[in-house]
Image 1 (cartoon, rainbow, N blue to C red):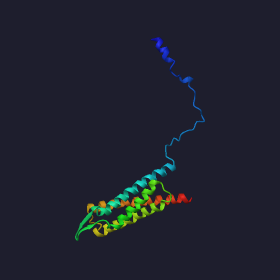
Image 2: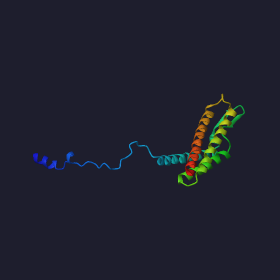
Image 3: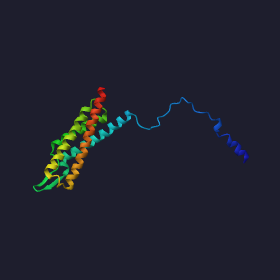
Image 4: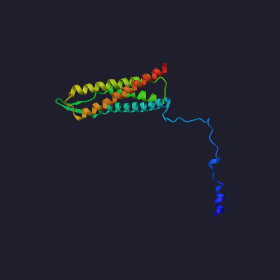
Length: 173
């Protein structure tokens, strides 16, 4: 058994015989934060996905009758969203901007700004229409859900518009 231990000991690397690492070796960043270039690419990808989803939601609102959300009032059922043209415009603007962002085209920022502005304007108009028709104290759960969804659309619109302005500033600087 002593013979096998002597044979196996030759395979071991002793720490005292091991060489130290060179001191001029390139060191990694220890903070683990992505650089500004990587963060900008990530934001671009997420904004493109969000705009494509928003375009799909706008198209479904146009095709399926304003999400099928109706509020029962004294005068009968009234739609909670605007009729056909505004969701179609929103869908076209959001799809255009999202698709151009995905493809990485140059000069896409005006399209992103247009989609963001359309989201803000149309969502605020629809919120105003819901509140004017049903009153602030008499909101049913469908109207509250619609206002929540439109509030999210306003946030996405502000994100797209600010992204467009930040990128345009970066291109001119």
